[in-house]
Image: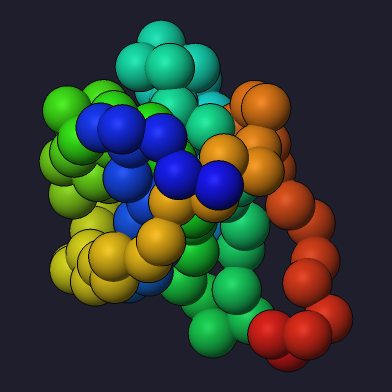
Length: 101
């Protein structure tokens, strides 16, 4: 499914991003921006997210990820553009994804 003007981005946020409410505040920010997708902690200590929405909204969320919540120390944000699918109805925390671990 494609929708005009919508994009999908996968990001890996590296640094001190676990144990600082990064996932929770990412959900709050995504909700404010109208972005759908998910965020989860990775075993390697980083955070991964997939975000879908308008280019402007997804871009704003990725920009926010460069600093994250107070207490986070973001070292880098690596993004990959993917094909928009429209599969998400909200932005949620994922707690595990065994196919990636």
